[in-house]
Length: 205
Image (cartoon, rainbow, N blue to C red):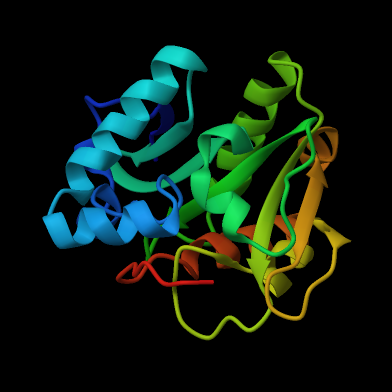
């Protein structure tokens, strides 16, 4: 099985699931996101966001390929580039951390260690860039696939709660710990990444 992880760019944006290519849940604040949906321009807004972050900050995601078939992705950026982050009651993300926005592995490719490889690749990238941790807002009442990752799955893969909340706790993973994960954590990570991304919907928090 040949697998490779490639930085997300406008050239391979089309390799994300169709619903994700036009999802701007994290990329826009709630008001702008609703306006983009009404105007029918979320895909254009997504492209504009990725282009701006690439030019200003650099790589903000990875796409996973198995035998040249795109099977997953992860998206991350400093919170300054993630307007939706400030709408959460447990914001802001710590200044030494990058925000894990969302991630996904296609059904049928889970349980193969792809999640571990993906997050370790992100960890190495961010460590080189001087960051110490990755943080995420979890959904403690998660029931259906959505853009916010389920909080209990985040804790299962090593995230620790740094600011509790009954619905949207903020969690943190020290990047160096991702370089020595055990098998049980790898399996939990695959379950986490396979649990997200259905039809995304912008909704008020």
